[in-house]
Length: 115
Length: 114
Image 1 (spheres, rainbow over the protein chains, first blue to last red):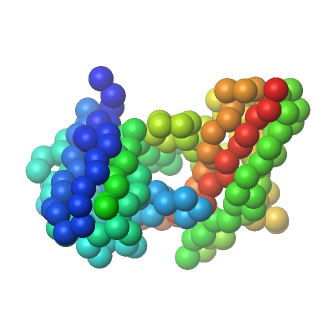
Image 2 (image 1 turned 180 degrees about the horizontal axis):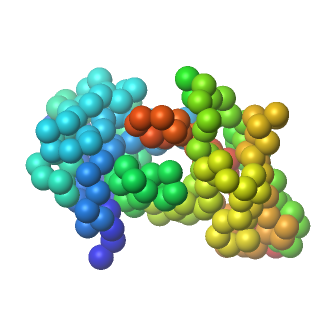
């Protein structure tokens, strides 16, 4: 099994619908992140969580919300999807003691299309 | 504040020729620098990292990068490209104080031709 698992892998949804992207990890890491990737823009941070009770907005949090249900689970929700939220979404985890040497561990991504 | 600029959005090389992917960074603190690779339909994989030890860093699959503080650069190189190197590459900077937030460059898509 992958260290960081994202579901679904692909999703097409309609404008105005609520959608949840899920992420689970087996790394035992406290820190989890949600990024979105757009062509030519690299990855941008949406939300991050240092533990179950610590959730923080990233640089592009508008239109998104998150839930840290457990150390191993971090979900991203789009309350009312809009077309410019069409993107590739990545979940990542890190261990503060290992970040410098090992960076982050990324999931395989969820490709979301809003029509 | 930290930022990173990848100077080429696309690079095309022939198999067996050298690869150079250019990255400049800006950081208020002593930075940690990373290169990540993303193969089609895959997640991001750490290629190599600089964390204030040796300035010439060796990574997986024959890649290496040199940290040049005077030029604020961290260019990625490989002596001989292989078809399997075709992917998107991201240069990433992280502050080494407090929270190690990653700042990504826009990415460089590497194409390798036979």
